[in-house]
Image 1: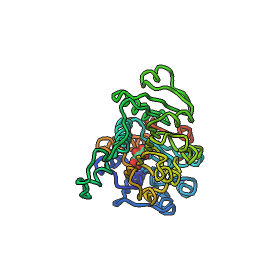
Image 2: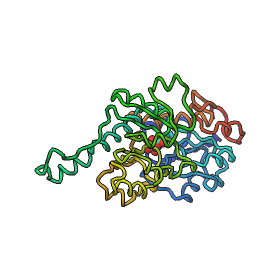
Image 3: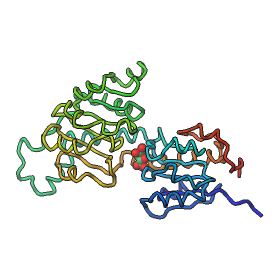
Image 4: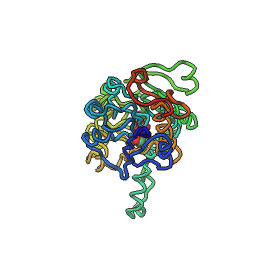
Length: 341
Ligand code: 8YV
């Protein structure tokens, strides 16, 4: 009798040819359509699995893994992993992995593009043109804010923040940043970025970009009080996580002219978007696509596949997943796969 192959659950449709690589070692249960899985559905799917490939829409914590005794690894397709309760997974001996690095440059490109679109009112201008309003054109139509030689404020100076700072050099921008920890001097020089405290960043930025990871500590960090410290001519761009910004306070600031414009790729209740934001003309809204170039999204899935394969003890990196989040979980022996199973 042949031993049953380990089973993998893939929570969303993700490049079948890339995900298909898992079939060399595993039985793979794919999800044919984009699905908002309810917690009970996730728990049911994980119950009989050894590993899972999931995305930021799949929230997984203690209740979802409680009935999954074989589950050893969850590969998140994304660098951010606030959809996973890492402490609960570690307690359960489940390794979690993410997809850093492969998306850095693509996401930095997009952050810059979104900031430019907000500052130069690109989507608003297009709507105006499509509405047939060009005849009303005047010398003061769609006046925006300059980027070149302006002060760029970056909140969160990880890999993506640094990528944005490097791009800013081409626009001759002055770059300020705030981060949990200050970068080494050599990296600050390379990024041509100066460290400032949070309030100084708010007060001096002509364009403020949010690129920090989400945690409960930064929930609504950008609230009415923070927005009140910004220049009324400033723009705010968020490519991190929606929960960092108090969206009602932002809508107030944009509506009252307290802030010039905003660019948002992420939302607190996504896929729902605060209706007050939808009603404003001076905010560019995109549907969480910052890492969405074809090559990068494929690379993210490929890295997640590599992580899962390695975490389950097979393939060229068996036992050494490239980008673990909670490596401590690896040490916890769970009955399961043999190397080469
Ligand atoms: C998403 C992201 O993961 O990597 C992240 O943290 O927010 C994005 O790249 C992506 O949209 C796929 O879920």
